[in-house]
Amino acid sequence: GDPDYMSPNSTLNGGEHLLYFQIVFFPLISYNKKRFDREVEDIIC
Image (tube, rainbow, N blue to C red; front, side):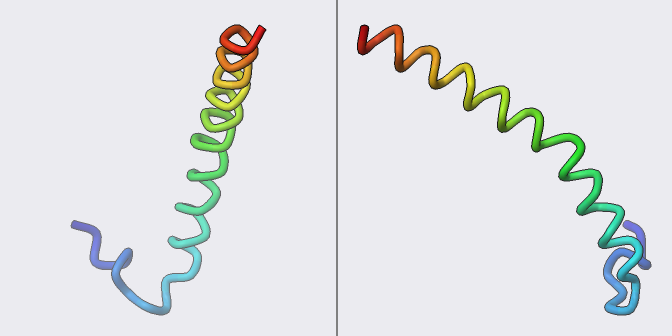
């Protein structure tokens, strides 16, 4: 419901969301990838 978020000239807001995405989801993705690789190794071996 934030009007500044939809505004085209609010690049700062978009940058903040991108930073938040990198901080939150990047470790989550890498963690899940490591866990997935470990499960695949358990299945193969």
